[in-house]
Length: 66
Image (cartoon, rainbow, N blue to C red; front, side):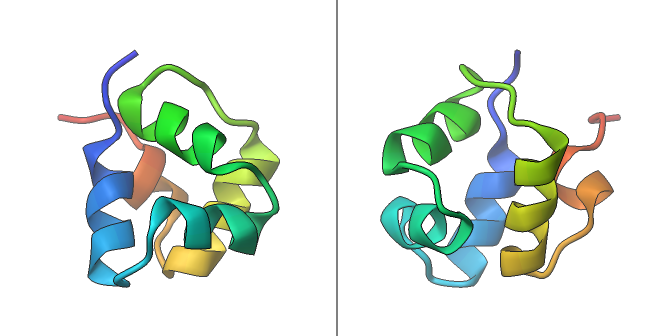
């Protein structure tokens, strides 16, 4: 699994820490860290929650890189 640089960039755009994003989607900071590092494949429900908080689409954050 590749690192999720789109997620990290979108979080930075919103000036959110991993902890703040984790709290907003009701998971641990470690979960957000693992997703960003490509060590954890989140559920579609979690992906959608993250997208809602960051104002991005599923494709923008979790789509295939071309």
